[in-house]
Amino acid sequence: MNKRSGQEVMGSILVIDDEPAILDVTTALLTAYGYPHYTAQTPSTAMQLLADNDDIDVVLADVNLGNGMDGLTVAEDIAAKGWHGSFIIVSGDPEAFAGRRGHLKRAQFLMKPYGRKSLIEALESARAMAP
Image 1 (tube, rainbow, N blue to C red):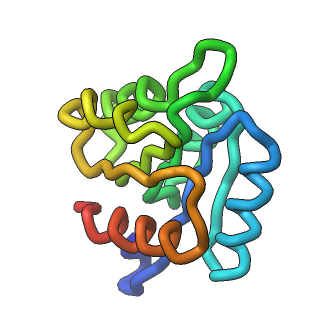
Image 2 (cartoon, rainbow, N blue to C red; image 1 turned 120 degrees about the vertical axis):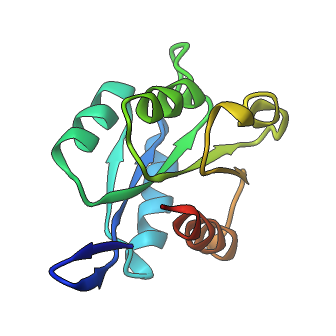
């Protein structure tokens, strides 16, 4: 959570996935539970959203973003720019995250397919990691 004007304010979630159907389902779940969010289908859109919106405190990124793009690399690039939020890395292959976890602080893995309960638990856990 972000502190603004002396109040605790829920930050927003940036969801990065190249599959529109996954974005639709994820954002429907987030909306249903009152989580503000942004969506990006490409790394460049994600970076622009982060630059334009300082309320983002969690990035949820799919490992495989299509066209040879890699959500782990995007997350590492975001972290290297000094962003202080938390990451949730999503994949159907747990090994995709295991080998590179050490490169990301405040990151966790969420296995696809995920449901409402596991998504909400991952978000709460990610927010608990934030500085």
